[in-house]
Length: 316
Image (cartoon, rainbow, N blue to C red; front, side, top):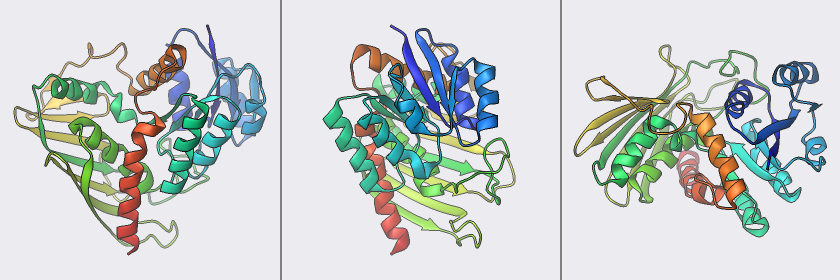
């Protein structure tokens, strides 16, 4: 069985998915959807994709499309995920699932009703670096006492990971914090029972906080400290320090180091060293096997409940 896929959003992240899918057998991208037709046609030609459109509805109308991957602006995620499920398509939506709890709950409710595979791209669950730590925890060899996380970008204008102009505004809480809030609960295997947030000044043009600080506590007593900034002029990305009872680990995307900055070989953790590819492999395997995927919309809902709580605090 070949799973035929439509991919929406031919920007920086859409390309990462197209590159990952090239390595996965039994999957073919047959439709590409993006905002600017000429640019979309260029990407489609590069990856041998036959159908190109600027409207997701055109792709959902194609009978041969089994599944959709959404790499579109945050503000469109929930509505587009609902549209895919209503059209009878399996769907993977990039993080975040939604930018409100109400919308996230609507997606989870419809997924339950349809029984289709619906997952959210909480990539940190799939990066080999974090999988290595997860395996140590599962084996009883490591227990997190504290996670110390820095999510840093230099983004004073509205640009994407490739430095290109964005049509939408990114968000530290609903997008970037979602990675760590979910990962912390997933790694400790316990729900978050306490959460606090502070934010810096609101940017006059972008209308968002450029700096944020979040504290989390899990039911087993483990804590997490998360610092986020769009003002950081230095190394960009998210850096995770796991402080545990038997070791310290530092994770940078797919790479892992010990507390002394000595590299740990994670090449045998999974079939690939690419977290996005591993995320996509899980999506397609769940479709073929008729099961719930890791990072299903139901599994990640708790993360959005915490984000909602933090938003209430910040707006209070």
